[in-house]
Length: 186
Image (cartoon, rainbow, N blue to C red; front, side, top):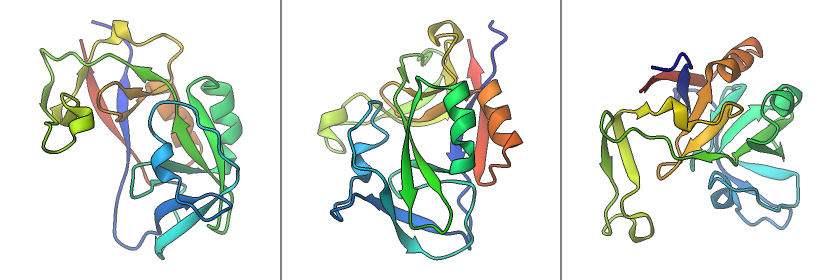
């Protein structure tokens, strides 16, 4: 068993917080769907946040389509800790500077024998048949995760997993809104 500790990173949705429905490029086109696919994208930055619910602003949260947004004060720390794992895209329109975290590293690491999950079928997403839909219990093979991977998408699911060091960095920066669910390792 590996001594590495991993966490699923998600946002803590709650009442009264600001919600961003999408991210718009300078022409006004919604480009949210281009992010969070595990690859870098060419975008004209900054993107403008389309606020769908006004409320309290958190330092970390997700858009309607699960694109993570973090306060820009995290930029330098993320660049130093995970330079090859995340593309940072400037976002304006929230009062203070934010960055979209386009996670570009994808790791094939699910231990399908010890995880409990359901998969997508052709009726739901014909383009993603066999992809993971939901995990009741996520268990990853730690030896499949490169030692320099700090934040990554789980292949065939696109859920975000972070290493304990990355979690510590976010907590030190006061990232309210970030939720870290422990991930089992085999």
